[in-house]
Length: 87
Image 1 (cartoon, one colour):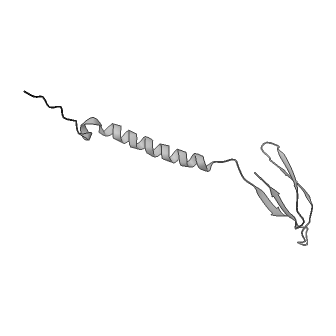
Image 2: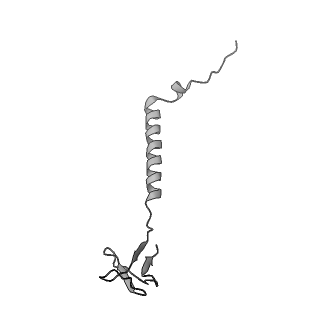
Image 3: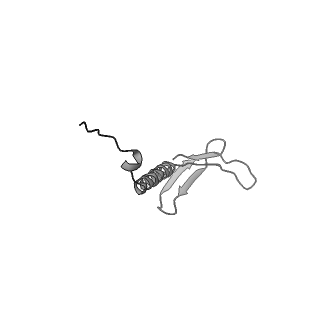
């Protein structure tokens, strides 16, 4: 007499609660990884320095100060009055 070893079907190997929790974990992993990529601490500040008449002010000294940390960054506007604080 020969014994046959049959592979159990997928439904017998994995229970419904296991599959449901695995699917939920996969969805959670995908959502948190996508959100974490979007949360960066990089940015820039750009603008044009103008007086009250709208004329640009070249070579103006500009200081940007973080209210939360007190970090102050300084730059000068270019000859066209454009300012840029890189990230």
